[in-house]
Image (cartoon, rainbow, N blue to C red; front, side, top):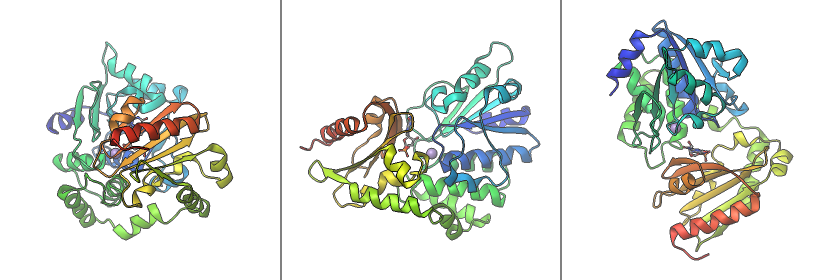
Length: 334
Ligand code: 5GP
Ligand code: MN
């Protein structure tokens, strides 16, 4: 499945890499690893994302390769692109945020269009790219980038190994989510052979938080509500609380799954009021029920056991309605 992509890569010179809005380390690690590999072949590569890198993830990009899309600054670059890689996002051009429209125009241009290549591990891909590799069994897009680079005969440099490991570490919840399998661990072993220090990377991701973020975690744990016969746990976090703790909504990685620590909880819900007055919904499940269908009904998506969406509405109302829908999904009484 990689040969066609490898053939396109060998023929072209100008590349753009992008990913979904609400950046995470699988998205960024996959981009940075592919960027370094392509540049090792002498290609000209730009990573352009709709969102800027949240403070908590900036450590991943010491050389500042990641750029936030600006229509005026990047239009000529997009015009020159011959290949556009869309990583960790297969829901279509809207999923990549503000830059989506400009990239879609370049990929759909009647004369001399760029080749759009989608590589992702989310289920139910949209038909928007010219070449698509989507494997929902992969625990992270970084696993697929590992496969691509190794199939192409690329070298796993220490930095490529580090970025791919960070993607896998975080998207598997430290090797514990249901998609973690033998292949995931085999890849991790290859990355450790290539120079990754698992303890060091764990510390960089999970043990460098500001005090206020850890205190906010305590607040969320204290505010958890449990219903549906003990099978649903939820928390609503408003902007005022985020402001009081000095934490941004982009830095809440790991929070949606906190309630899964409670025995008997099958679905956990975190609703966060955003700065734009919307509600960002995060759903997690223990694997006994798929929550991505519910997220898709709300205009979002995701994996069976980790999904999300952003909706308009009042935080408390959205939360209450969702709890009711989850209880219906689980066929439990409130
Ligand atoms: P999180 O709750 O951590 O933001 O996201 C969990 C999962 O749901 C991720 O796989 C993410 O890609 C997916 N997800 C979250 N929000 C959205 C959304 O608005 N649209 C889509 N398609 N997927 C989302
Ligand atoms: Mn991912």
